[in-house]
Image (cartoon, rainbow, N blue to C red):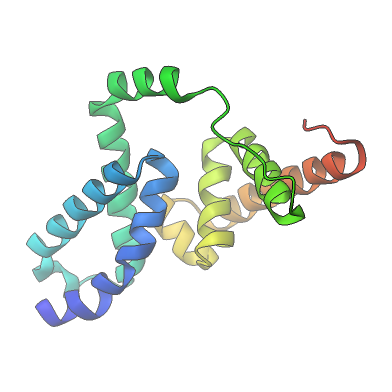
Length: 168
């Protein structure tokens, strides 16, 4: 059982962390949540033999744990956002790459939560449609539709920014 954990769950821990960070927006909280997830999975390691896709299962546990963390810490999050909100993103105009990262970040923030999650899992973490479907409990067609809408929004917004210097 522990061999399955070492071979199939531990290698995914960095992906779990990146995913938690996109939801929680705080490195310490993301680390804490991933540690809790790893402990939960360790405690349920006897089930690992029954699980078909260990990575998707671990990512779903991470997602659920993040949302549980947000529910229990909502007041603290709101206070921090009020303090940290003004101009967190400062563009470095010396390089085009930094400028594009800034605009991409702003465009991604405008996406609805499901589109943002699916876009991140596919484009950043390189997951397959099936893995995303398993993690988010959506059908394959729903994943594809959400991803298409997210890509279309990102593409059109970045084109407007390049052409006119404005974000929608």
